[in-house]
Image (tube, rainbow, N blue to C red):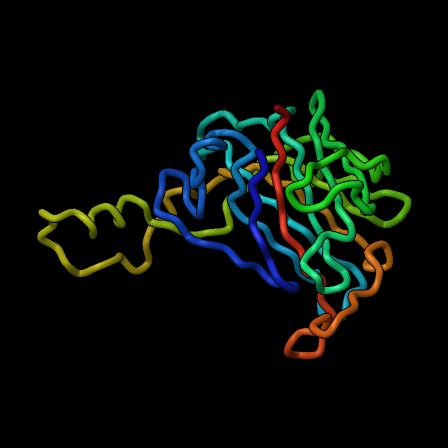
Length: 229
């Protein structure tokens, strides 16, 4: 089983949902409640003019503030796909898979199969990091790659209870949302994987649309989760 979310350039494309755990969660019954369910995917420069790119993967495991954190499913391989020549076929992949409390990373490397033809773990170790809720637990490799894996707060603000009140047919108060509202899901409710990597390890993007509207070179990148059958 493979699920993907496409993101063009160095910016976020996300769909806000109105379900129990915010921001496009639980949108595929076959992945619900596991870290195969992609919530959001971001790719950006950490600072203007930086020579690095940051990839942030948010996965769904029903992690709600005040409840025990979820875990990364060891049967799920998360893959960041990177197209460097503009043909919408992955030229490089960065893969992450958890084992015994650690997240192991591989790549960036050319995959042996692309698209829906199958996913094989690339034989190119990148590094590993302890899975932790402490943002200070970041590993930086000798190549200057920074890695994090663990529960984090969802980036979206959503007043879930007021939303339901607004939708209720019997609602007498039609004034809309409260300002300010309450962030129902304030706290850690995604399982996140973060990779900050030097662009030199990704290569120069090529192709007619390798530069965005403001003249910045960009990669086309998307995310897949792959479940062991």
